[in-house]
Length: 301
Ligand SMILES: Nc1ncnc2c1ncn2[C@@H]1O[C@H](COP(=O)(O)OP(=O)(O)OP(=O)(O)O)[C@@H](O)[C@H]1O
Image 1 (cartoon, rainbow, N blue to C red):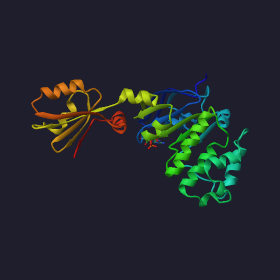
Image 2 (cartoon, rainbow, N blue to C red):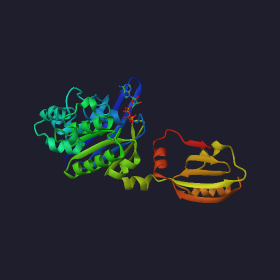
Image 3 (cartoon, rainbow, N blue to C red):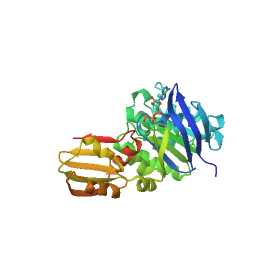
Image 4 (cartoon, rainbow, N blue to C red):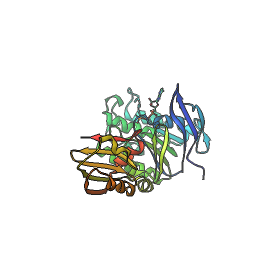
């Protein structure tokens, strides 16, 4: 089957700064994929190139088997971007009708209103909607063309818990119709809950990729915590084998590492007076922070 999206050796430079750095990504049709990464990782720049809104410095993007940004793709791809301007002078119904008119096979107005939860607000001007309601209207606009492929840049920003819940239910229903969804998020829990596939982005590159389960299994960190009667200088913990992060809380030290056997051996051989050792799995947040952070971290409380 044709891939939904393929980024091949994709590069985007702004002056000397490389926002997307030889990125290779490919997504199957009919799946929900999350681009997960911290601020400035290059997610929006990647989405903008997939949409054909900005040109790559080098490399290639193919969308539904075509070069990005063609007229044909504009009919088949829907997008929700970060800063959407509502057509403020129009009512909710007029906005949705206007967007439906751009497309040859639009989604029904009823379904768009169901999805946005704005049935009771059809006659209100878009300018009078709250921030969360505008975001829901913008989401419905992105679906007006009944798209096969949906690109969502931080879709849940500004939505309350109820709106978020309904939003994720809608995304899952859209995917079960056979549509492909690519979304960006900072929130690991969101990606974990809804995505079939996650690509973790940091500094313009893919640093880990796979199903949520595979990613978790491959990248899980463990914590080793203990007391040290003769602790060395704090930064020294980061030089130990496999240690990604160190926290010192009074006498108790906590080290985060992927592989702990050699670390434990090193600790036991040391002259630091190690006692009261406890080993546990680290939280997923800690694991992803270590994947996307640029440096090892020492946190001293
Ligand atoms: N038009 C531009 N000119 C110069 N630098 C830019 C431009 N667009 C993006 N950048 C830079 O490229 C990097 C990647 O930005 P991008 O918006 O793609 O990140 P992001 O992962 O979407 O971040 P966020 O989660 O904050 O939205 C950032 O350092 C940003 O400042």
